[in-house]
Length: 317
Ligand code: GLY
Image (cartoon, rainbow, N blue to C red; front, side, top):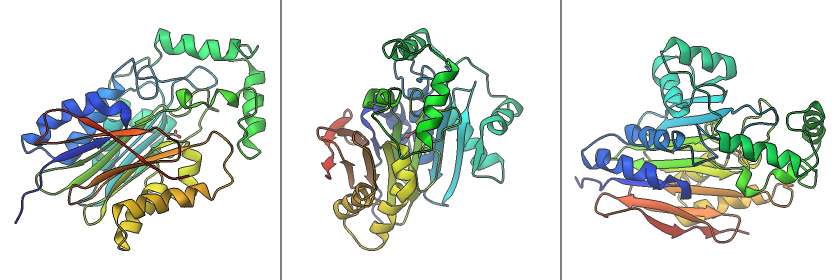
């Protein structure tokens, strides 16, 4: 039987994670360990304001993290949502998968589990993230953290998302980021990991697609793996990651499956400026990226390459 060449695929901000995880894959390590390690490297990077430590705060100035991990061999999955005070969200997600009978723990419950399992509590707010958080209010004539901001967000959430709103104009691409990793190991197993601090200035408790298995993350050894970055509200509504994998199961090529998953999403009544990106990897090691906005890239490295390379994502409009 042909031994697969390990490969790891990531969103554009995943370079450091790939560099950390590739030696592990080359040494015969598992795809699951690789995606966890890769996500954790990005979570610990204070320069990445979309993930983990240094992530952009919610409207109250609190950093809330979402993450999920999925094992393509068993279809087991773990996830945490709206976690405060613990930076290793992907590791916590894995511990939910491996050490509890559950798939998803949120907020206080996830924080309780983290404490019980001895995870180190951490203030996730960096000076730089707080400065950016304050500035976004001030440039709109709003007081950082004031209750009228909360009311502005609450009003918006009772309507279709409206990016014309004073506060939600903040939801430009620089306020939203996520990291995706998909890996294929030498045993032929696939795994997927996703981690994010979600939408900057979000309503407290807002959970995006990243910790929702099927929406922002899905992985099945038989067909492939997919993960998303972009406006989670869209991927949640059409189960984007699972859709792509299901289209593969139905016999579509990787290109057709990715395009079809984004066409489903583009049929939604999404407001201007809302976008979605997907990365995908098949059991044969074929990979691709898809996007609804021009100029987006993704990263990949197989074990026979010296360093990660970027490749353009297929645009679906
Ligand atoms: N895709 C990340 C989020 O919407 O939170």
